[in-house]
Length: 129
Image (cartoon, rainbow, N blue to C red; front, side, top):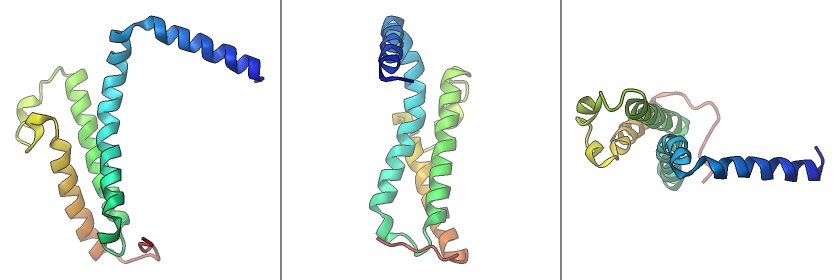
């Protein structure tokens, strides 16, 4: 596509999104952000803690991010599709009443990943930080 075509496409797309209205935009964006922000924060925390992770830290990242991502997905599905039907079960998770249950799940994933990092054989990947 040429530059002019890109400009026209982006202007039309922006106009369509602007005319949807704030409530419609929030209906779409809040579940997406609710899924992504715990994963992003967890990745930042793991990046900060990278030098203190086991020498083979891949399991820590994989297990922690997977558990946080699955929990965030379950939370979003519960709130959007099931209208909070599973809230009584989710409230058993510490910090969930404040919306931070993913931190508990991430901590469990971190511990499990650290144990796996110590047990699994190192396949040549080491921390470089």
